[in-house]
Image (cartoon, rainbow, N blue to C red; front, side):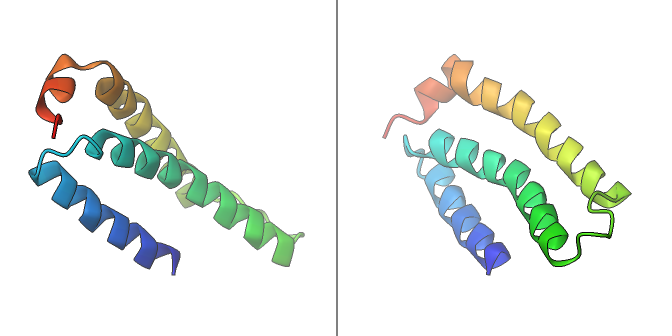
Amino acid sequence: LVFLAFLVVEIFQLVCFFKKRRLFPKIYIGLSLAYIAWPLLDAGAYWLLWPDDPIFDADTIKALVQAIGSAVIWISYMLHSKRVANTFVN
């Protein structure tokens, strides 16, 4: 269900991008933060069910680092770029 929700938001984000809506940067930032929060919430739920198992494997850490790195770069661009501010004005 979570991945279906991500898909719906990504499709809405794509529509906002091509229509150059003012809402696009906000949706992009929220989705980027959700991609950081999801592995943490997923690992926490796994830990609640199986507390003796390790929760952060190499793939989880890799996904988390990639999401954080991407978010740092693109969120700062969305917030500070004049090109973004001038493009998404509708």
